[in-house]
Image (tube, rainbow, N blue to C red):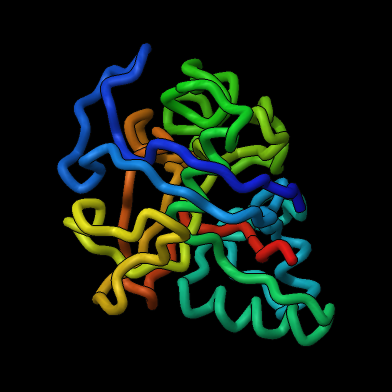
Length: 225
């Protein structure tokens, strides 16, 4: 786990240097968010860690223990976290959407990059143009300023939040946790089979909590004490 110092940042989409896309409406407006310190996984949760806890491997791209586990729903992830916490005595959880974006941007150390750690996606992430149509072992590309890997590409990553299309217009300015209710959960970061736009640190994606696919995984977080 990587400790992420608390701080204030601009969350959401803006036309940044090197940006080739337009800002989706649900990623606007750019707004100020302040977060307390937390920790986030240096890597996406791997197949070997999942299998050691759950006793199975649901991934499509198997026989790659260091590759991210995928084909896991948000609900599946909650089961995994519950078992992992019982085993370790820790209080792991999914990151909030705000925590995820703050960490992807490098926290207070990061620059104003389109992707996590660079404006050159090939340097930091696996996506449709370079993945060879598969996932890759975690940590194979360049880390961002915090030392966190693969926050752009490889697999989408579940966040804890419900999705709200207009949430940015009225969200809390400190430690936002998303809408109180909803029908879909947020995932972030893009994947091996998606285009570059999806890998932007501001891009928001959503799925039903029961949905899983070969492009969808997660990383862990926990609150600092």
